[in-house]
Length: 312
Length: 182
Image 1 (cartoon, helix red, strand yellow):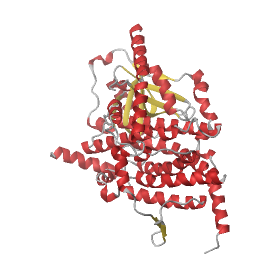
Image 2 (cartoon, chains in turn cyan, purple; image 1 turned 60 degrees about the horizontal axis):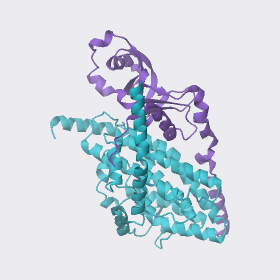
Image 3 (tube, chains in turn cyan, yellow; image 1 turned 45 degrees about the horizontal axis):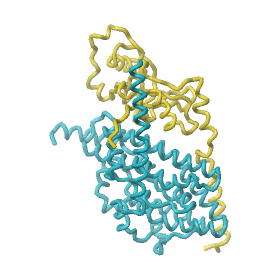
Image 4 (cartoon, rainbow over the protein chains, first blue to last red; image 1 turned 60 degrees about the vertical axis):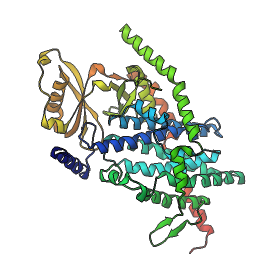
């Protein structure tokens, strides 16, 4: 590193220490840019792929009200993907290369969306578990040092509280329903609990990116801290619903004030993020098909714009 | 799989009636009209939108306060020519986003930046954008109801629609009354 570079880096780190936001056009270390593009594009892909597990239930929602709500939620997720691709673009990534990486299977997205939404109750539990987990993560990222990412997160968090609450409402209604409905929601809780805990990512000791992300204020909390907060928040909610969680080691530790949970199956996590989860294939096929089926629309839009330009 | 990327447009949302237009993000579209329609889909799903502006991203001239402290754009020979209107956007302080501050008349983007700095420099702006007004397209005043009213009829997009706190409280109370006090 040259003296000039070292000075720039020192100035950059002072700005972050003062709580200033880094904006497009400001000097930033290449590694800061690289880490942000990696994280933001993965986050964008997660929103887009995240439309799929729930999208299948839009036509099978049990009432018009539930259909409207689910449609609005899935539409939000599409919008959130757009906000995030935009934030990554401000760092010089193009939308074309990000989407290309996703469709080629080279980009990662959240492991959770490779699990199936097997029953209607899963829609409730996804809102309650997955969106609660996402809100914890995103509330932290709303304080991120990179301005466009933080602003996208503020917008997303405000909208996602609706996602969490519509899910909890479904869960509540099912727990108050017939024995069959109670069983359905209990089974969905057992399906989604562990995959949701995995969503926060590897333990801090096994997370190579965490130190640099925390140092530059991209993240302000670690995977394990966020996971613990999720457990502490959700266990009392499950008890209020009278729903059991599939962890025999779950117990309240009065000394620390935290709920202690059992061992996460990291082999399963590694399988899922390396492409061998229950739905990886189906998700990627659905995205590729959507992209290919939309090709004629993009071609038509461009032809129309060209013709108008020529006519002008 | 390798489609050509469509041009990018910056999007500004008027969140309060008569309030300033704020930069919300961007959309890609084949032309400005479609960009405006896409902007509505992406940024106006909720009632807090009273108007939209879009601007082709390649027509935005940007300078950070840091850059201006080192070097103001120098005047160019053509600047005595015909002036046009530029819209000025600034990010004030370190929180928030670019918001519309007002307009200046200038014959070049560089001159617009200098005039913007002279006119609005007291506002502790950390990042400046200037855009020729002729490159902006906005949602039509007389179509505002058709564009933005439908979102007001969708209260289920708001978290307050779901009485979660109320039913969680009632569940906890029911549970406590069943369990003997420890």
